[in-house]
Image (cartoon, rainbow, N blue to C red; front, side):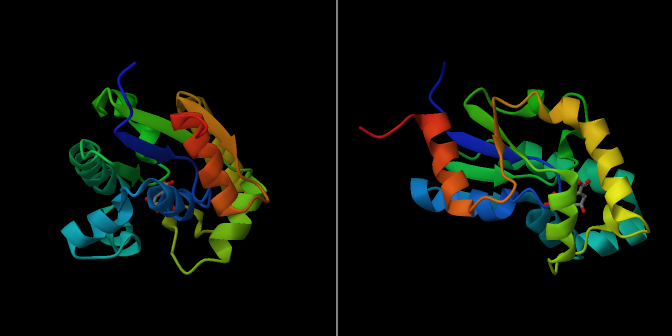
Length: 174
Ligand code: S3P
């Protein structure tokens, strides 16, 4: 297997892709790339406005393009949004030196975290967010399962998770 040059963090909204990804990048001395932020920069509007004005399909197209470009960055931890995996060939657009890690969060914890955050998530903004989260999660789980590694995150400290990811991907330091 080729040496890992990019780590891609996937998982549901609220799984901690950004927080853990930043910690992992710091541990490795690598760069952290938040795809939502890159889309916002490129589009000149927030993700919530993007959904409102241009719609989810346009967002997915842009998210895919931006991720496809930035996943080829080396020495980078890349975190696409939770729905990037929806295109069936999403993983096939990654370079062979990318390693994909699924941060597995329960719907209950995801909703708790999302509602405690300042980032707006249009897909959970309507009524009955927990039911919606369960439903979206059930649809995506088989796709997330295609990751190289899965790490459970409920109730855990981000630094501890980052350490586990580092060991899974690169092995324990001697
Ligand atoms: C989405 C997840 C969000 C953001 C958008 C759609 C999704 O990113 O891309 O609101 O479809 O799961 P996070 O996973 O970083 O919250």
